Length: 189
Image 1 (cartoon, rainbow, N blue to C red):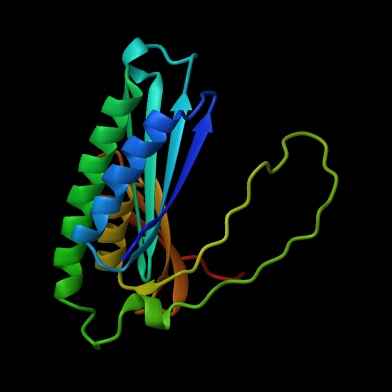
Image 2: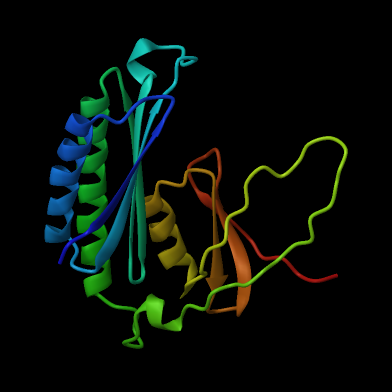
């Protein structure tokens, strides 16, 4: 199976050499998971980074049926940052594959039970801060422990939004300063 690869450069030019290198490495990711459909690679140059070793940023997002994994690494060389990000995404793919082999318990993958959320907000003119980015994504039903695992696999360090199958409600999982997790269960008032 061939993986669709999208490569984007921010504040830098993506040369043919870089593009060939990335495509060659990313095409090997299907060895770890077979249901990978597309991979997005974002390369950035941050000239405002404090350390010169943090200026080149490589971010890899892997999408497939029932899977979204992400890794980001920084280095002083774009190739080194990309290699470190690929290594990290490979570890996450292996970990995800191991967790998925144990199953959900009811025999259905999360991708089969997930529903897309359609939400359109009216555009209004506001004074002050504005919303500069909107994201839409499918919420896969899962319990708190699956949410903690998915939060780690995606590399989210602050919070994770999910549909809790135990309460049939949208919850927010967050990591506390002491290393433990907190769960926000909103109620309509």
